[in-house]
Image (cartoon, rainbow, N blue to C red; front, side, top):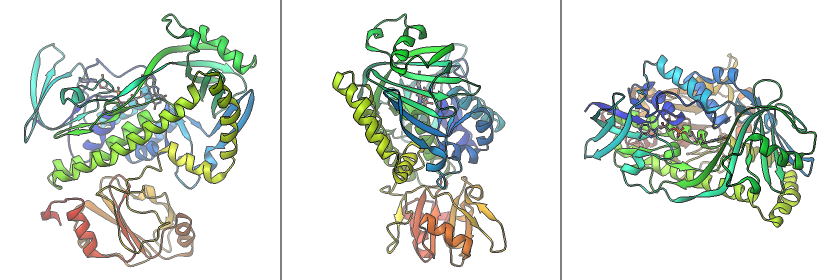
Length: 524
Ligand SMILES: Cc1cc2nc3c(=O)[nH]c(=O)nc-3n(C[C@H](O)[C@H](O)[C@H](O)COP(=O)(O)OP(=O)(O)OC[C@H]3O[C@@H](n4cnc5c(N)ncnc54)[C@H](O)[C@@H]3O)c2cc1C
């Protein structure tokens, strides 16, 4: 075998996967057919869950330094601000990052690429996957090398992070059902003034469509995303000047553009691969699912695909877990992608339909419904959880097991373990639990009861134990998060709850480790 994991594609998804494998002790080969990193900004919304993952990777500070925090979202219709969602408020207590970070995909790729180089892995540019053949114990990949020659390498596993036209998907004969949207999007980086609330995301619903304005670094810098007015569709000479009249017509004269540094139009498809895996090959990111950019979910979803697969693949490659553990990648990520596709599709159709009636519905009824819903704090919080991806959960996964008697309202198996600030010693300070958890290992969080010895878990050196003592400061925080006392939570490396119960039961944990996680016996 030449290598354990071949990562095809060095976009955001491939870079995240390579980073996560490397820091778990598996050195991947990462290739990309392009000559170097992409220069186009493309995606620009970094969600809270991604920032939590960046924090574990040690790159959150750099991202925060380079990006601009969007601390609120506003919905405009008929020249009036109909709704305001204070993201800082809505996400308070949910995540250390209660905002959307506006940071271009190119910057995200640069930060992840720098981290990868720090870990001593370089992307092999100008290297294209052109052939694949799978055998029981390996995949033989044919690569076109920078000098134009072809060669083969044998890899134990192949990760297709190679975008919408994924060669890994096509060479495995996996279909990509879906369709193109008829609308043409445009994206522009502008210097603009107008009714926009500074430092916040501004969504304008027009009779003829919608525009999103994202605050960018620098004063009066806005990224404008929208769909081309019907009259401009089908023309290939459209520039930003051509779009301005329709923007003004809807926004009024107060919207003024001083400069436009980048303008591009693009068409979008909505598709999901029929499978995310074929034996030793996996599909991740745009290779597995593409959808409308409404909600800034695309790049973030690919990053989470990589985060979900990396820890499982690393355990299997290192001989710590049976390959059955990998079945859970598809089981967990396919439903997330399908749901995302359906919701972005529905939201998209609502806000882009061309009909006169739809225009009326959009600017009158939809705006009012949204305004009413968003005035309710509970709905704001639900919306924040969905958009920030902190609400993603895998409750029906084979890796999720909630023991009997556990209260329904409590966070349970499959959920992302909540962000808590607790005393880990009764005489110690209040600490951020997320900073205590190390995503390279499993974590056993034992609440209000004595900690078991490490060998009781059957996880060998793969787990860390965190004991939460009974303390009035902890009581309030646990109550807020609806975590019962006593209880215990066994967290997977990606921060999702694997197993939970009330009184610690060593036998239940050991059974879970062997039957659900398929960890090799010699480590149990
Ligand atoms: C114009 C535009 C605007 C967008 N705006 C947004 C937005 O606002 N919000 C959002 O969330 N998403 C947006 N997206 C989507 C977002 O860019 C993608 O979701 C994201 O790039 C997916 O990352 P990825 O790593 O999975 O794939 P990609 O970024 O496509 O990376 C795939 C990589 O694989 C390489 N590759 C392909 N085939 C091979 C091969 N055979 N061999 C070797 N290498 C190969 C490619 O060169 C590429 O570098 C936008 C997309 C476009 C095109």
